[in-house]
Length: 355
Image (tube, rainbow, N blue to C red):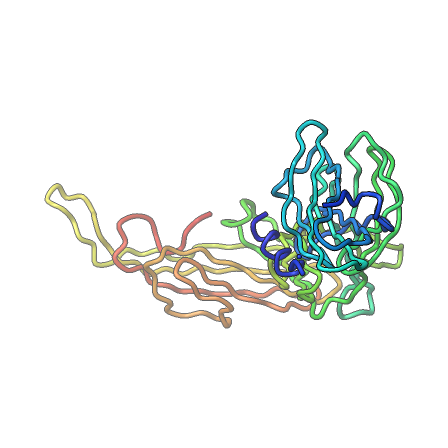
C-alpha cells in the first residue's frame, strides 16, 4: 500500500467559507481501475465544481470499508487545505481554498475491497506455428451484497463498461498476443520433481508488458481438434516462463551406475573410514518412442566435491551440485550417454547422488 500511495502522490500532485455542496456541477460516471502489476481495485470519482473565492467545503460519504489514510485526492482550480472526518454521519469534509471564482475538479481515489480479480493466461499452439498465441483474461467477482452500477473499468490500459450483480463474476479478454520465443522440451529431474517421470514443458519468452500473477492453461491443435494439455501458475515476475504441461510418456530413460571405486581412504584410530576419493561411471540410455523428433534435458545430481573426468555429450549446465545435458532424438532412436566423475575428499556416499 505504501508503494501505491507513493505512486499516487506522484501522479496526483495537488495543484489553494461557504458550504459549496450545491455548487457541484457534475459527478462523472465512476471509474474502477487497477495499477499494472497489482491485483487490487481502485475507484475514481470525478466532481466538476464551481469554486468560489475563499474557502469551499464539500461533504463526501466515503464507503464504510475505506480508511481515511487510504483516500487520495487531487484538486484542480484550488488548493486542498484539509480533510475533516465527521464520525456522527461517517462523512468527510473536503476543504478547498480558491483565489477566484472558477470551475474546478475534485478527484477521489480509494480502494475497493469487495471486488476480487484473478488473471488467467491461455496459450494455444497450432501445429504449423513456431510460437503459441496467448490470451490474457481476467475474472472479476463482486463479493459484496450490493450491486455495482454500470461503471468504467480500466484494466491494463483498456476500458470496459459494465455492472455486476451481487456475487456475479464476469470474464474479460484484456489482451491477445504472440509469444516472442517458444520451445517444446522434456525434462528428467528426479531430485527436483520427486519422481522418475519425464515431464513435458513449454519454455516461453513473452513481453514484459503483460506480466501478472496468474493461472496458465495450455492448449494444442491436433487432427482431432483442440487438446487441453495442462495448467500451471506464474508469479508474473519474469518474461521467461517454464510451463509444465504434462508428462512425456513416449520418452524412456534408464540410468545405471557401472563403477564406484573408493581410493585414498583415510581411517581414524578406531579403524573407521573418515575420508576418501572415488572414481565413478554412470550410463544413461534415453529412447524416443514417438513418431516425432524430441528434445530432452536430463539433470544429474552430484555431491559438491566432484571433478568431471569425461562425458560423451556436451554438458548444458555445470553447477556445484548438478550437471545436465540436452539431447535431440529422432523418432524411434535410442542414445547412450556416458559420464565419468571423481569424488574428492568425501566423508560419506559417492559423487553421483541418488534422488
